[in-house]
Structures are given as structure tokens and as C-alpha cells.
Image 1 (cartoon, one colour):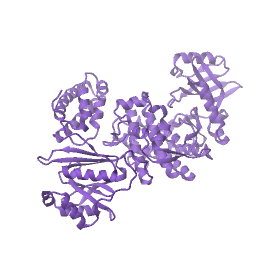
Image 2 (cartoon, one colour):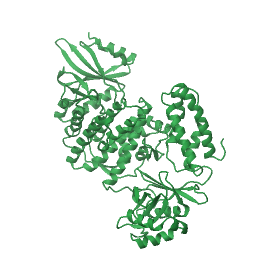
Image 3 (cartoon, one colour):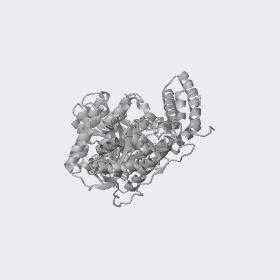
Length: 640
């Protein structure tokens, strides 16, 4: 009669533990709990144990408890049967017997091959020790090349949206944990632009997943684990080449191969997050180190950068050897986006962790779109943008031609007081040799004074640039017409008697906002871009409240700043904080005061909603109510 030994068994639900004890009485070996290996997608309890019976059994095993044991056992056997013999012997664990019924639960047992009595530990144990980078490289190389020495499935052509949907599956359906979280945080798939976690706006990865407005790529498919993480990769001794994979009940032999390395890397990131303060710059630095380690400079995440490079570089070398290297780079980023959304949808994770993973998905989406452009891949047609030839507008890059165009486009006072000759020189500096000049308008950006910047449209690009007193340019931003996804015109009367407007040009990754253009110049500029891109403008209403500010007005009206502790306050103001963080064009009336109040309210609420003492929470509620009243006065004709 075997015994259950060791501490920690109470992690199991009482009814399950009782059923396990009754079953264990029928065995002849003792079972000692070594450690729990939780952390996978299934949320099923997984234990590493030692089983011993004198003269009969001495082995280390893995026990997994779940609701659907027979199906998991079938998938595990499929993984064993469909894996190369060499990889199976070196890196997979074998099933022990059949699935065991335990009063509504099931248990499957897996033996670590050879009855190995050496110390076994999960990859997680290397998190703060030497050897992590090497182990990451070994595991990545092996699950790609060793498990797939020859691919049995031809690459599958998919759009980015279709690829993400294949990774996310039912998580995108209404009512799922991911969909509920997104709706509560103002990031549902119907919201195209969302905060990017770095003070800006980015394309919503859920919007990318719900559509097919993207390039087509060839997806490499083969054998994959399906839930690879830091707790189901077991190491023996100091040599990572002897690693073992456990809990591979989600195995598939036609899975996207970029998914396993991405999920394993993000499971490491989940552990690193625990060492970094919520809201700290180090958390954003970790995001950069994981997605784009080549851009990482922060010393605080040097270890994460090394691990990220190991994953990315090792996988890329394997893909280059297959001849699909460029397609792999795109798949790797999309896999990080999809797996980050999987983590976002895990309700058991703290909300700050779920938010970080969503922000990582936004950042990854931006990098994906940038890489797609750099690779020169053709974009799929956008709705409403027929594939007709681009109209030829504008004049050649010539001082005389540009001077004549500006004479037509600028009123007399602007031509004389604004130094048209200086602006002609600016246009010549910004344009490439073969571009045609269409229009230019003085404006302001980044809070500068009127005329301290220009927005220039050519037959190929839109540019903004800041100007000094000598008309020298700096801070130049360029957007190709084919990248533009949205054109907006916002009425504005901040310059006294002059009728002015703001123009917004948005792509999937960046946004150009030119402020304070003369209204007729803004109209001409946007009309020109409509002809050049096939897009139609979205014009905000010129009423008591600009359309772009309505969500903030609604959030201000709905938030009541109830009494309670910081946690209560945080729960009640999440929608308002999301609205406060969203980037908008300046409000038509009193823009500077509105901007200052929005910034001040966001600072007050951010400080009070994060483990603040009761007196700070009380003071924050009082200040917030006052600021809300003043903002509603400014944003509406009459406060409700």
C-alpha cells in the first residue's frame, strides 16, 4: 500500500485529493511531491513527483490533473507517435499507463525517461541565474529543427488577420475573457486606435485580428507543443541539451511553428514583470527587450534582452535555412502579438499584467507594420480604395514652379509676412529629386507657435517638419500615401478672427497632427490627399463639443468618484482613465486650459488609484470632482 508524502498536496481541491488518496492505496509505491509546475494555458494542476517502491520502482514522474483526461492522454500519445524517434527519446516524457478517473477528474502520469534520479528543475529556475540565454537558444533550436527535421506540410498562405485568428480561436468570440476585458478597457476590436502604453496611439491588435487589411505571408507549419512555457520545460543538471518537455496534450503536427518560441518567451516575460514596479519605465523597457531586443538600451532589462536575442536569432537562423526567412520575421512578430493577447485574456492574471501584455501586443503591431513596409510586401486592397492608377498632381521639384504654386495657395499677408521665399527653400529641401510638389501650409506641431512648422504634400508623401527662424528643418516625419488609413479635418478658431483648422493624417503606426492651418489651406490639402489616396475625410462637427471629445464627456458624466480605498477608486475610474489617456486634436474652445486640466486630472487619479493611503484618496476625490465640473463647463455648453 503506497503512501502520499511531502508538503503542498493541499493545492489540489479537497474532493480531488480525497479521490487521489483512495486511488493511491491501490499502488505499491510511495509518491513524494517535489514541486508544482503550474502556469500553462490549461490551468490544470501539474506536479513533479518521485515514486519509489523497494526493488520495483524508482522514478521521477509528472502528474497532471484535469477534467478531460482520456482526450489529453490521446493527444499525448499522438505527440509521441508522430515525433521523430531521436527527438522522442531525448526530449519527451512517456505516459505511464492509462488516464486514471478520480471522481469527475482525471489524472495522467508521465515518466521522465530512464528513471533519472538527478535533480530535475523547470526552466523557470534559471530566471535569475546564469545559463538562461543558452538554455533558451537550445530549446528554441530543438523544438524547431529537432522536432521538425523535415516539414510534412507545405507553407500555408494567410493574411495577418487570419493568422491571428488561428492562434486566438474562441478567445475572439463575444463573451470570452479577452473580449470582456477589452470591452471594459475601451479596446474592443471596433476601436481602431488605442493607447500604446508609451503616451501615443497605435493600431488595436484586436482590430488587426478581426480584419484582413494586411499582407499575405507563408506560414511554416509542423510539430509543436501548443503551450510551451517556463514550467513545462524541465532541465537536468547543468546541460540544457538534456531538456524534457512535459504537458504536451495540446500537440499538433500542423501547428504554426513560430507560436511555441513566442509563447515561451512571453512566459519568461510574465515572470520578469514581477520584479518591476507597476507604471515604471522598466516595464516599457522590458516590452522593447522582448519584441525588439536590438532596440533595447536599458540596463535594467539586460538579461531579458539577451534572452530575447536568443529566441529571435536562433529561430531566424533556422528559418533562413528553410528559405523562408523574410516570412518568418513577420510570423515571429504576429506570434508575439497573438500570444500576448492570449495572456491578456487570462482572467487569473492581475489587471496590470493583462494591461502590459495588451500594450505589448500594440507595440508588436506597430513593429509588424513597420517591418512589412521595410520588406516591401504588397498591401492587400483597403475597402473603398480601388486599385486605379494614381492621379498626377502638382508640379516638378523646381524653385520657379513651387514659387508659382505657393503664390496661388498663400494669401497676400501670409506670402509677405510669412516669407514665401523661405518656404520655397524648405520645400526644395524636403522633396526628393523625382517628387512633384502639391501643396504646403504653415502650421504648428508639438505645441509650437503658429508658423513654427510646415506640412507638405507631394505626389508620394506627406511630411511635417519644424522650422527655426532661418527656415532650417528639424523633426521631419514622412508618411507614404499608401500607408495612410485615415484623414481628418477638425475646425479650429484659436487664432482670433482667423478661420483655422487642424489636419490629422493617420497610418497603422504613426499619426501626423498639423495644427492651426488656415481653413482654406487645410481644405485644399485634405482634398489633394483624397485624390491621391482614394480615401474620404472624416470631418469633426463644429459644434459645442468636438466629436473627438465625446467619449471623455460621457466618461466624466458617468464617473462618480465613490468613497472607499484606492482599490475601490481604481475600479470605479478605469473607463475615465482610459478616456483621459486617449490622444485627440485640441478642443476648439480654450484648448490650453482643457489640455492642462486633462493632464492634471490624469495625474491625480493615477496617483490615488495605486496603493494610496486613505487621506490621499479622499483628497483626490475632492480635487477630481472640481476638475470634472470645470472640464464639463469647457467641453459642453451647459454642465448637466
